[in-house]
Length: 243
Length: 235
Image (tube, rainbow over all chains, first blue to last red):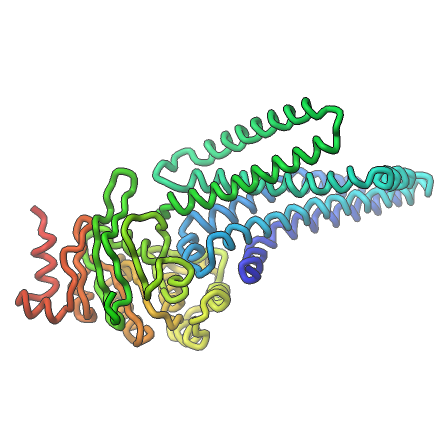
């Protein structure tokens, strides 16, 4: 597993590191622009930051799709799938690598917001730091909600990755491979709609029990993630036919 | 399974939807031999090899390689050269060597470096910058760099000129682990005949002949190439 992770990171680090570097650097530029009230730096920093924000989703999605699709279902699959490691280790290593890249990207955006906010504090004085106080107070008052929020985020990332894996697997196995991107997008939206309906149903029945509602949603997401993983594994074992 | 068999298949059947690619294949391939898997295009050679390397995991019947079903244990002892480029275009030969070093216990780094050197491969150049022929050479060198128990070459000489074919055969013969078996799939019989010890004819998904080359030649009184033309004659 260690070697699979090493090669997984080695394959995909470049675009993610460039993206995160753009986010951090642009936030530092914005910090200086805000703290010194320089319009030129503000303009450049904002443009790069918004650009990074807008492209983050696309870059991450492309990186994930490539790691699942290219390594398993194109000619490169001839090497990947004949490497002496189990299919579980192969799939799990890809999920772990992509999860870490998503966390790293979210973390770098969070850090960048703090950096920019520090610029506002310098410009407006210590009084502007009250938001930090409010935030800390909210967490202190309700630590369980905060922890559940983090777990919900982790579960939703896992759900997203396993759903994407399943869709990619589904449209790369068997003989009928036409319009696979279009079919993949449609299926992803279909999964999204079904999951939203389930979430609304949970919210409706557990309207006055927010903690239970969150826990149930987490359990559903984790359950679906496990289901998507095993379905992907099953389809690969039964239907994989590399061209 | 006899003691000297490396690959044993019993009633092996593979379907792609309604299409029957292999039908009740029974094979007993000896260890330490160079085996020719011979048949025209579409006869089922690649399907059989894909089953051996576990690229196709769904089949009926049984396959045993060195006593194991295709899986992690067999992948450790099989060195496989597919009929296409399987290396990432983003990689260089150095990256590919690092991958082989990490995942294959039988990978011989010294041998790989020697072969790359003999083939004048620029180790740091990315594959997308290399010609098709050079990529094929790198792949062949990597596969031969392993001291494997079974080498599987799927159409290694298809699409190359006659001079290159001789060179590829020479490279295989000079560099494969001499205790190992080699399965070489091809439809170019005359070029391959000389180096083979054991012959398997595969026709429309069925094994129609599997025996020692000399025995076949003595019994049939003709060369493998002539016999191939007779067996696979178009109506």
